[in-house]
Length: 113
Image (cartoon, rainbow, N blue to C red; front, side):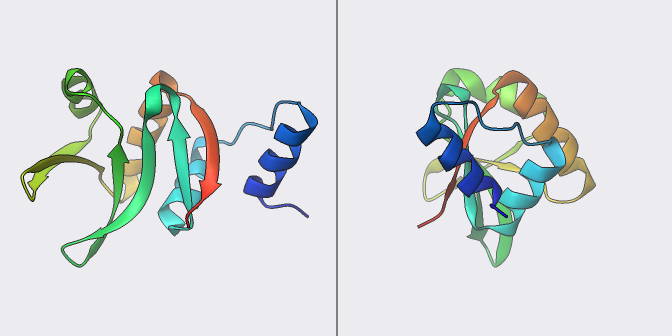
């Protein structure tokens, strides 16, 4: 049995498309904290620890994307003079991940390291 990351790597090496992960699978993998989900347009979603809480942070966005991302349900905080965007954890997070993946499809999932 291969993990989703290993299956994607094998498919990539063989030159074939990897099986698409469902929104629930993507949510579980990223929320577990062991992977980074790379989305289209250079976006990346990973679990981070901020103020003693685990959060899902979206990185790689441009200033022109902020309003669109907030409209999809992400919230922002300025930490150390830098704007950071987060996906709420909980039941609403899955819905927001689905909206993100509809607009910015999942490109690959990589292990953190």
